[in-house]
Image (cartoon, rainbow, N blue to C red; front, side):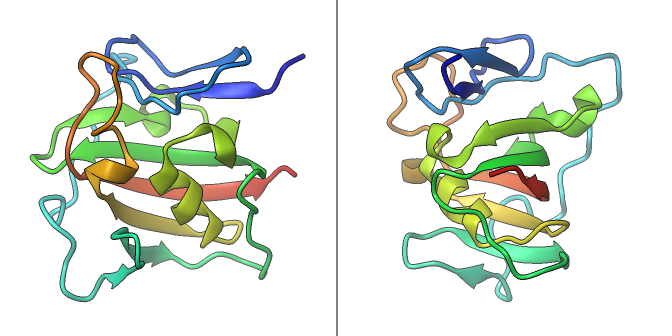
Length: 160
């Protein structure tokens, strides 16, 4: 079986993990599973002054510390819960809203996730502000969210 691919495309009704060879790390709308929307954090419009920043432009805050010291590698398989918003507070995707975490390889998602999740340890939860260039600004997918995106990610486990 070919490696799993995380598709997150705005036009999709839900996140799907498909077994295919080509990956584009695109992101999609959850389409609602009958659950209420998750409110955007108060600081969704821009990273706060106390956020840490990488040289690539990603900003983050640790919301809950994790356990252990092991970090995923750029091609590690991981299982996470996450929610994503645009900087105007629009929810566009959430594994929490769907009620189940998602597993994928870090080399199959947007560069901002590949970089950011590698900073985490199991059990940790962070909020990331990911510049458009590390998200979907260069995506040919119609309707993909553009500009900075905000994600809350909880690293449940490193699978490999």
